[in-house]
Length: 320
Image (cartoon, rainbow, N blue to C red):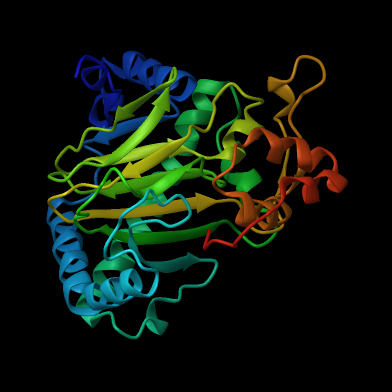
């Protein structure tokens, strides 16, 4: 609990007053030492967030719960007897916002839910870009630098993973989502404020990310670690299952465009950088097969294309 109390929570409204410097310092410390922080007073309307939560949970009950139960039976997970390490206890669907939206193509989503998700996605996109500029300010980079890098020639990639983590009868046997770092840029998570489960790895311990009403959890992906030359780092995180409660997770990923050229910012490199330079799409092709493996071999492999096969990529995963 003591560690949970120290989890960085940032009140963005304080950026407009006398506490701006302290708030910027808190964001910087969180990026350097946690890779995660939680924001409140972020400008997203609470009634919109409540609507998204209500509709997400309703959509699971009406459209996904039976599919999830059928999946459990097909994989023999409806009666867990031994620990399972290659499957996640989650029900998921994906929404793509940029470069082109697929909202109209998702057949089992109501028009009301579709409209709310479009509004929510646009607001999160704007918030992500504002946050990237705050990071630029803390890093001594010119305003817009990160947004420009992410743009490439086609604009950024932005999508949302909508997940539910149903109650699990034997949570010690299976993870809701296995430990990993996120491949992309900056991630904005609207999580359940009643059912916990998200944890990050800090100093060798798994720390709970506290559920707070109407907050947005921010975490940094692998691309920001590369661009900042390791000043900011992506962090391993996971979702643990619970015996009671259905945990909602709406995670939006603001990532570089497919042809964006990623490399450490010159002003943040004193001599030679240990980090690679690459095209984002090439990194994602590698990541898709090794998501649940450590990030360091991925970085090394991007420096040496021939080393990619040595990582033994496994099953592909849906990523943004």
